[in-house]
Amino acid sequence: MTAIIIRSVMLVSFAVLAMRLMGKRQIGQLQPFELVISIMIADLASTPMESLDTPLWRGMLPLLITVALHQLFTLLSLKSQWLRAFFSGRPTVVIRDGRIDYRALEKLCFNLNDLLEELRTGGVLSPTEVGTAIMETSGKLSVFPKSSFRPVTPADLNLPTGYEGIPLTLVLDGQIERHNLSLCGHDENWLAHQLEKLGFAQRQKVLLCYLDTDGVLSAYGYRGDPPARKQALGKDEVMW
Image 1 (cartoon, rainbow, N blue to C red):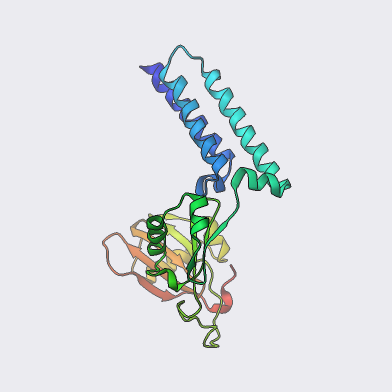
Image 2 (image 1 turned 30 degrees about the vertical axis):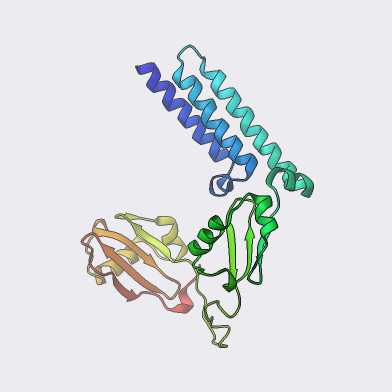
């Protein structure tokens, strides 16, 4: 039993490491060859895990070779458009100006029910509202509404807008995010002082605290109360 546990931990850890070596893109968007490699990694890791007669290196070596092949395919895809199309395919336009390209759907083996479902998932009820819909190489449908159906933006109304960036998380589940705190140019004493003003005497009582690019500090407690907010920085003090 102990041997099985040790082998399982080692092989799962090695498989996770292999996936991490292939990068975040491989996890988020599976191209055809990446899907094949992911399935192979799962299969190669499970075989020596089930059989104690199989040496561990016979499971780890094929995993290393699989990762090396993935890196090779990725490098070739970066260097050659032809190989990129061979390994990953090309994006296909399936709707143009509200008109469905049925021949493109046939080539993709993508039926109308699937198309309508993807449109509804993207918040579109009717294909006539779609300016362009593109089937990406990852299998995701990108939908762009016609200009007459898209939401009004400040640019349409010629309204000026300020800078809007990613809020900095300063406290997460009671723990200070020191890297983010340094990005806003302050230290833990400043944060403790700000939290005290918001009604939190101890940071351990803070579920979430973040600072947005308007300089507003928001803090959530564990009791489900509305967040406490205050202007902690001026807009000219925002540095990230």
